[in-house]
Each structure stands twice: as C-alpha cells, then as structure tokens.
Length: 220
Image (cartoon, rainbow, N blue to C red; front, side):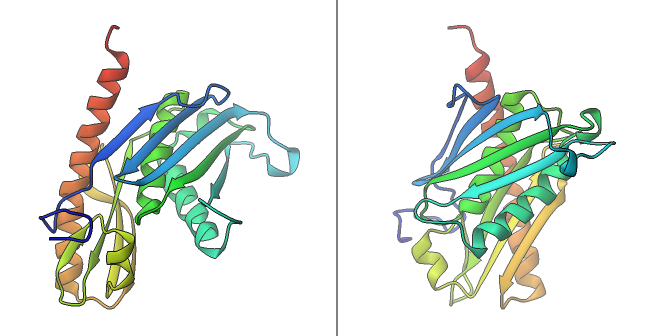
C-alpha cells in the first residue's frame, strides 16, 4: 500500500475542480489531486504597459505564489514552464496589444503542485472565455528506488524517488505531448513507460474536465 492509502501504483488521488471561485477575476478555478490544491485566477485580456506590449499578440503574465513564504527558484521555474505551455495553447494573436494575467496560488501541497497548476490555469482560462487551441492536462510520475513507477506521487514518495517526470497532453490530440519535464536517473524504457501511463492519466483528467463543465452548465 502506498503512503497515502492507495493500493495501485498507477492510481490518481481523488480529483477535484470548480469554476468561478473568485468573483473579482475574469476567470478562476480550483484544481486538486487529493490534498494538493491550486487556485488559479485570470485577468484579461486587459490593458498592457507600453514596455510589455506586443503588436501582434497578447502578453502573458504568469505568477506562482507558494503555500507559505516568498516565491523561490522552484516557483520561478514553474512560471517559465507555465508560460511556455500557455503560450502554445492560447490564441494570443486575436488579442494584440493586451495582457492576459494568470496567477497561481498554491493552497495545499502534498506533491505534484506543478501538474495541479497547469490544470487549474487551463480551466481558469476556459472560465474567463480566453480562446484556446486546446485544453491542457498534466500529471507527475516518479520511479521509486526499486524502479516501481508511481503515478501522482505524494511528497513522501517524491522525497525518495530516483527520477520524477511531469507530462502535459492536450485534448486536441492525446497522442502528442504538449510538454515534459524530467529529472533524476532513468532509462529510455522507463521514460517510455512513464509516458504511456501519463497519456492514459491525462485522458482521464480531460474526461473529468468535461464532467465538471457539464455539471456547471446543467440547469439548476
């Protein structure tokens, strides 16, 4: 049995998601893997400072705020990775000379906050009505010291992992990787195994998105 009660190595923690959780934002969402939860807010498209203006597209402004204390190198890295993923997903060219601001607030962290941040940002952009080429779904996987692949690892599992992999897939083509980040020591076969499991898990998350949206749009 895994440290957080799961009996299957390839089992996600319970997924949670909600839309419109912040009344003052143009769009917002909350997404969670178990007790790892992230709140995302979107403002824009809105006026942008002249120095940041792009004549042919919107300027993306990404901010990641930790659960406690000040942002550090890990959060700066997360901002860069989020910007790359969102720039590829958002149709920024239809909003030239404007800004789209995405703020990520970590509200609970028991591992995999980066994947939760990607998912929350994608849903918040959807809630804001920002045009996107596709919705992103992200999961993290880790190989433990014995070489067992663990999907959606907890902090305790990440502490002893020999490698960690975060995959992001789009709903327009579940066979194409939108983004990947790997660290640690791993073989090519292990990478392929992680990719296969991640693809299946992201398809599950995309299905969960649809159900969540249907619940939001259903007549009360």
